[in-house]
Amino acid sequence: MRTFLKAFKIPELRKKIFVVLGILLVFRLLAAIPVPGIDPTRLQGFLSGNQLLGFLNIFSGGALANLSVMMLGVGPFITATIIMQLLTMVFPRLKEIYYEEGATGRAKFNRISRYLTVPLAALQAYGLLNLLTNQGVIPRLGFASVLQNVIVITAGSLILMWLGELITEQKIGNGISLIIFAGIVSGIPQALQSIIFSYTPSLLTTYLIFLVVAVIVIAGVVFVTEGERKIPVIYSKRVRGNKMYGGASSYLPLKVNQAGVIPIIFAISLLLFPQFLAQIVALFAPDFSITLQGWVTAFSNNFALYGIAYFALVVIFTYFYTSITFNPEEIAKNLQQSGGFVPGIRPGDPTTHFLKSTTAKITLFGAIFLGLIAVLPIMTQGITNTKSLTIGGTALLIVVAVALETFRQIQSQVSLREY
Image (cartoon, rainbow, N blue to C red; front, side, top):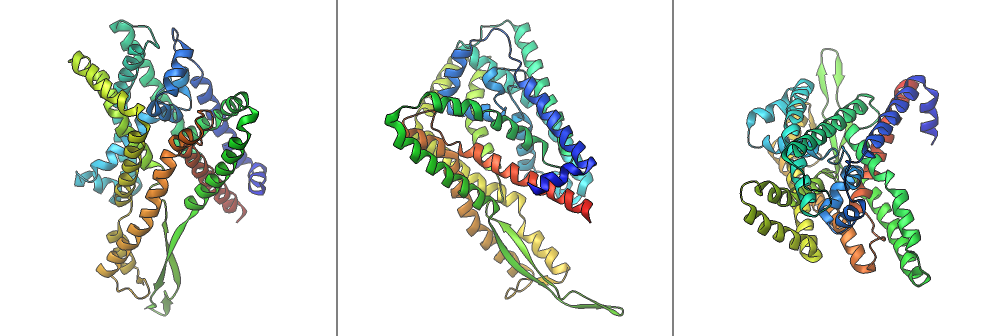
């Protein structure tokens, strides 16, 4: 709290905070503008019975529940970014742009991701509209109306992506993450209202257990998010001219959850893909589309099968994404060039093997943690038999991670101006 009070006393930081709050307010206003001609009751029932689209609704900031022009949220941009990061393993030139060309390369990489967002948003918009039409949530539209809606929804995703970049430019938080954060937090009053209205004295014990578990989950999320393994590093002494350099000791922090929430997002994107594919295939093979849609519906309604697949995908993608973002060979090379070494480990290949082994061990814990967080809502509904009592593990993880990261950036801005 003291840090925030100091931030508001600095005119430049105060202006940045108000700019960010204003942009988030614009996002919430746009997310409340619905597409005309929908059945809200049927839409709510359809989303509550579909785990995958319920997750997509979280990432759209509740805009999908309103069927607003922002219904896709930042999902297409996140998917485009993930695809681009995966392509760095296939195309060496992309890897060179992302890892070796510095800030210029990252800017070029992000620009390609934005271009890729446009076709992805258009495909997702058409698939989602077709799905909701088949479910009777929205009336069947002609080709011109469908094309118009696809263009509007795609433009909404691009506007949201632009708003996220405007927030990032203020350097007090990641724009995309803060937009998702704002969407999740905005749904808290409705969730509390649902819990209060569904309360009965017979469920008092269930509510108390739920409250205890919720506190434990929040503490666990904070603990794992902040958890790290500190690898000691010692720098050898070097003499250059009349001065001596090095001799200092430091540490290399290895986060328990290095992948963040990305594996969950990627797992959900993979699980959502057959559902959108079934709607797109309807243009060419209507019979096969109906069959595919039946398989997808049966799979999503089977909580046990869906939960196992979801957990397995999150664990696999945690290892996969960590291997992309964390390069032990590059770190070992940089340590050796700067005269640093891990005590008891020889520089070069032995350091690389040590870092790989250590990362694999701590990633196992992080992967299992992410998997449990992902399936926590399913487990909660199965135990309590109450849909209103759902500990949104993924949403909670995002809220805690974004809040901590934003606080760190504000704290660093305050410290910089104090010095």
